[in-house]
Length: 109
Image 1 (cartoon, rainbow, N blue to C red):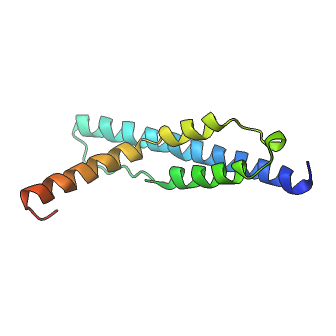
Image 2 (image 1 turned 30 degrees about the vertical axis):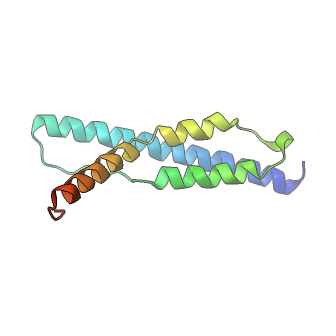
């Protein structure tokens, strides 16, 4: 293992950790939004949509370009972090809403 492999391994682990942190923050924002909504508070809670998915994709590509003996994380870690991002579920609902309005012939809001 040379210095480039070590740097790429550390970089992919740091990127995966950063993506996991943002995904956890998005989960917290969705929970906070739900609690505000049920309490009648109109304050907005912002998430970072697609950012964890892009970061984890870069980390997975970086990690998969390493030789097998230099890989630190198993592949399921990247899939778990990518699947835990709740903003993808919210974006899926937005796309369903847009498709439904287009089927009815309405213009989107």
